[in-house]
Length: 167
Image (tube, rainbow, N blue to C red; front, side, top):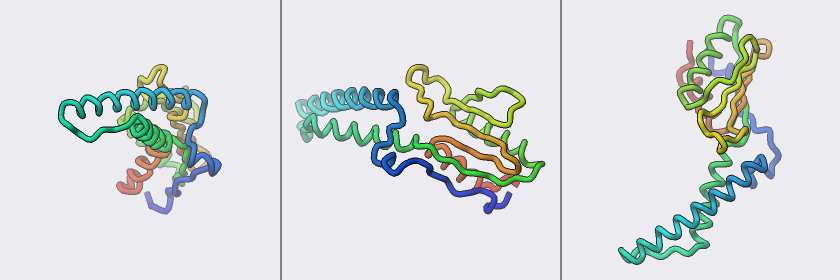
């Protein structure tokens, strides 16, 4: 496979999504809960270390800020992206299987209905903590495979394809 056959990552969200990467109400609520839990636990841990070891004291504002930054970067990696792969007829099945195998290795499970031209993958486990924004889609459209999913995973898949060129 030639490197020219794999497109660059496409970011098709509005500009404000980069500043506020929350994509759903469920993500917002979960982010607020994570920030609150992280802030309190981190604040209490620093208070404990200050008393025992004389370490630098951290205010609740500092702990809150660290929690906010941590959640922001987590949400940023889930922003939707896509890339396309131009393929020959004989490569389609091989490449779809390869992408599926790599996604399964990253902890995704197939949610497919056999006989369709689109593959849907969802993170294993998760339960109530699962966000639909973490789902992954691979679709066949003519001589192209369109790969849609979160920024971090799409970037890893694209680099894997570029690195190995799977000939």
